[in-house]
Image (cartoon, rainbow, N blue to C red; front, side, top):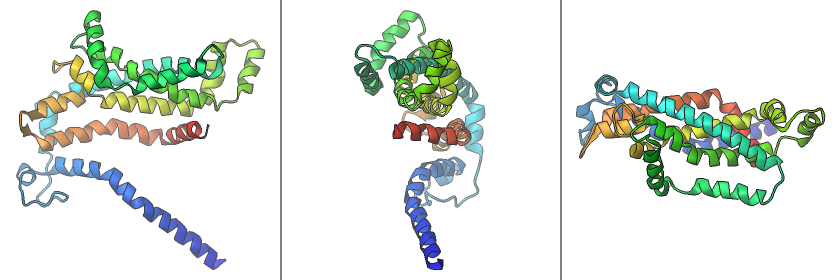
Length: 282
């Protein structure tokens, strides 16, 4: 028994050691961003300095420059507003579409679901030109509302495809019982299916939030004034001037910009994992 326990312990240790390279690979960019944002300028531009260590005293001057010398709070407010609105809108539309494709039977339902996924695969670099004409026609040029309108073009197909797989894991029997008792399809969706599908909804919301928060091409194309741009555009446009890169402030903006995503994943990690697992197993 003792030898078996030792073998099990050795197996667990070996498994965790095998994960160390992947952990280092995943965390190294965040470590380098935080390290660079805390270095003084003379150490950042010193050719003989050690890039992965802070030899001189750390400083917060890059954070101060970012927060007080640029409208960083305005950029973050714009990013948060656009991301929340576009994620909510896309999740509502994607939920209804995914439920219809997963539960209802109509002509070419399978082909229609595949077409939605193919739509998501179309790169944004091919779509921003025709979408720019739509934005101008709507009178939303240089406005954060242009992003609220255009972001669902790639978020809705993604949420729909992700939720289709999760809705198929929900037993049809509980829903059919509600229909037999007199509930409508919408009532069955709202009162029966959605409470069961909360992990899948959270997973889709997290992915949609991350995609819209990190989006750059549409934000760069459809907004230009400092009061309307998002953080991803503002940081790069204000802190990269020609061939001059303010690396300390750039990395400070990257660190602060990743905080909302980290907070969301920390609080909703269990729902995220269960949502992904259910969809993958199905």
